[in-house]
Image: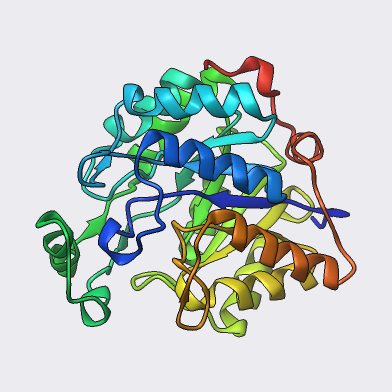
Length: 309
């Protein structure tokens, strides 16, 4: 289903990239809060949030790790908050769901299938690391399967449906769309479905234009007018895929979780810079960006006054 307004989501920081790869990646609670607020001011209607250890940037994921920046964001902006349940492929689903269960955001991300999760190609591009855990984590992804079984997904839905939280369904391949269709058919998720088709991560579908079209065609066939389509793409694919989706009436996600770059060979200094760039693309195509309240209406969200933080 196309919307007249384009929702920009911004993935502020995440578990894929490590601090040594960019000095601009927000790590401390204050950095994450300020980066999220900057993205919102630049035009992001939704901010997607992970937490990190402020000492070494390692991904962390207790509810308490989110407390400092959630409260600052809520007090300073009406932006929609989307908490990760993906967290890290090295964490069990019960642990991954706990912050969203505790804080009851308007949106939580939800991966829709298991997949190989290959981060190790980054070792060819980066040689100097500040922390020992960084190259070890990348090397270990040679043998990493990101588990999101049907049992795992059902656990997340059974846990979070009680809170009124809705979902950003992250689909990294065609099979994930079919998995989502199963849960929709079973009545465990409700339309409008916010489907985030994800491109360019090793282990998932590629980022060729034909891959984007294939995922869109499949989603159209499975869900008809019962979904809102958005895209994210890793690394240098971020802006080309976003531009393609925007030209087709889709929504877009950018942010330093998905790409550290603003252009070829140039690191993005802020999340806001990526939001501003994709906003220029959208408006250059004649589109308009959605405000947080317009995003709430498009996605049928419960409202910022009904969260737990």
